[in-house]
Image (cartoon, rainbow, N blue to C red; front, side):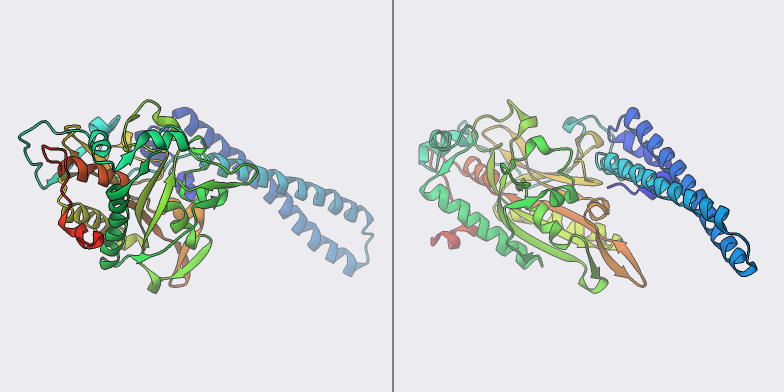
Length: 416
């Protein structure tokens, strides 16, 4: 959640930043109105509360001096009713403001470039150069079917479109990638955790998926539980409503989970293959740290994901996302895009985001900073999307006869 105190203190400055991220003037105007309603409600409550305090003192004087208290007692009782009513109005105004604030995205950092969409993102650098093929490279779904690694038709038979089944070396490679990624991340200081694939509404609100993105989530019928869209949700909420010590920070964690997304907002995109599935495997990086160490940890996470791709010998590039492509909870994001020769383009395989204290405010994750409690900064990112990594391996390591070479770092995991 955005810092409401900061918004109230510097409404114009915060509004200018939110406008860069596409927040409408209507929403900002409504926010301002709700601030005014709350301000009025607080003033009204404080007025009746002050009257109550004054009459309480007056009551004590009357008692000491032996005066008739009946008329004063009636006024006190009448004012008490007004105090209770004003308190309820203030509570309702506070809830209305916070409910609306839950739909407002995070402010972008000043370093985030302005832009409308992914076409305005800025390339930071390329890592490894794509190799040249002496033949026209095939796309991954052709290679997957030729080698018997992935069966898309059986995935549809078992579920619906955008599901697939892995066989033989395809299934073994997925498992090898998961283990390799987790081992690699542990070597970089990220503690491995295993978390539930179902979470409650509060957890999704804490990381910002709810209320805005409910249509993209799979909800359990009759239960207020959802299948996770990413391990970011349960891993970040491990410490919701807790106060950590400064000595515990930074907390750096990695987790493998299956992820589930309806992809309601991506209808018609990447309908073939494994780029955009309803169920997919992903290894995630999550960190919590102090504001002072936030960017240092961010760089560690970007380097970790990039070095993973380098170890797999996959050409990729780092991209600074513009305001129009920035996620709801992110203050800034670096995307890692892997080269896919079959598609002749770079495609996103990881997004590393710093949310500053946006998620921590929603999830109430704090740390003891001297005598006061301060919100942590939370960071998250893919390390990596397993299916997309498999796609990249197939397309970059294909041979003219359709066979696929296995990256050296994965051979020990395959008993090769």
